[in-house]
Image 1 (cartoon, helix red, strand yellow):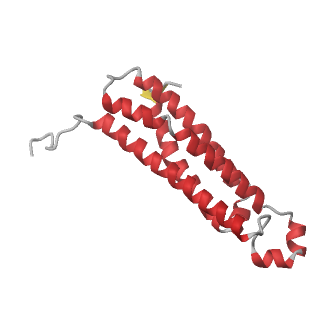
Image 2 (cartoon, rainbow, N blue to C red; image 1 turned 90 degrees about the vertical axis):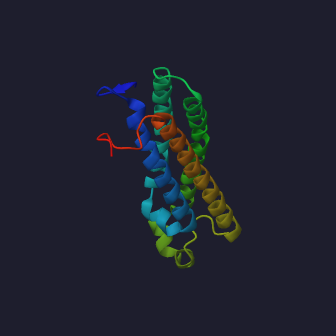
Length: 173
């Protein structure tokens, strides 16, 4: 995919990544810290992570097409280099989101008959150290993904807008 209605697809697809990756990261951390949230979201958490993961290479491919159609400079090359590093972070979000969802899901009958598990809200990972480790790992990967999205977006904005506007208005004021 290179153009959408005459616009470079990258310019449009980047908005999907900018919204979905931080949203997935936030949902992952919430579900890792609060297993009841993971049970309420159900398979939506790993599905959201999967859509985020698929959107990254699509956006990257569209960006590589765009890179071949603009003047190359250091800002464009920096943006491209940073963009290539997002996929592992989003893959980590998917793996952790799937693990958190799997651990939190329980058959309704088992949840209803197991009063202790329902009261403690622990799901499959009843050991506190495991829950803490998963929550800390989820927080670290989520933070890494969000920071990477910010850095990539900032470098892309600099590449697109450097010397592309005037500090004064077009009417001279």
